[in-house]
Image (cartoon, rainbow, N blue to C red):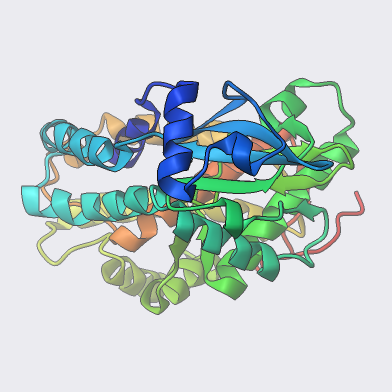
Length: 358
C-alpha cells in the first residue's frame, strides 16, 4: 500500500557520528552527554526508525537514549512528495483523493519527529495499561529528554525477532502473544487510541518473561464516527444482517453512490471476504494463530484482488482515512501472533482477556 511506501522514508537517514550526537545534546539540553550521564556509548547500540539508540548510565541505572537524525522532518516531507506521483500512477485515483489519504500518513509521520509528544504519549499509555498482565514499560526521564532526544530505562531482554528465532516453549510464546493481544484490545476498546506501529522491533521479551513495549511515536486516536461501525461489523452475520452491513459499507466509503451495479457487487464481495478473515479470531474463545492458515489466506486474497481488472480500473479510493492505521495495526498484530504461533484468548468479540490458561 502507499502507506507502507511512505513509511519507508523513515529508514533513509545515515547514522549520526559522535560529534553530531554531542552537537545535538548541546543544542537540545545545553550540555554534552558526558556532562549529563556517568557513561555514554560512543556509537549507537541500536537503530530507531528516525534516529539511533545509545546506552547510558547514571549511578547504577542503565538507560536507553534515542537521538533523532537532524533534518528528518524535511527529509520525510520530501520523500512523501516523491512517492505521490508513483502512487497516482498505480492506484488510479484522483490527486485530491490521494492527498486526502496521504495527509493522514504525513500527519502520523510528522508526529514521530516530535519526541516531546512521543514521551508524553509513552507515559500516558504506559500508565493506563500498567495493570495489564505480563506487560512491561520503561520509565521515561523528561529532564534528559527534548524534542529530538528521549531518555528511558534500558529494557533487558530479546528483541521479538530474536525471541521468535530462539528455542523457547510454546507456553511462553502464548504468554507473550496474549500480552500483545490484551494490550491492543485495551487500547482500542477502552482508551480509543493505540500504539500504531506493531512491528517486531518495538517489542522486547524481558528476562523475566514479560512483553516490553517501546516507541510510541505513532499513536492513533479512534474517532467516534469510526469506532462503532468498524467494530460492530465484526459481530454482524453476513447472512442475516445484509442491510446493516450495506449501510456500514456506505458510511465507511467502501461503497460509493457512483458505483455501477457491477462495482457494488464486486466491492461488497471483496470487503466481505476480507472482513470475514479479520473477524475469524473473534468467533471462538481461543484462537491459535499458528495452527491456522489465516495469514496465508489474507495474502492469497490480496494477491487475487490485486490482479482484478475491476479493482484496477476503479477510479475512487475506498475506505476512510482514519481507518488506515487501524487496519495496518490489525494486520501487523496478526502477523506477529502468527510468527509466535500464539494461542490467545479472544473472548468472543469482546477482544479482551487477562489470562491464558492453555
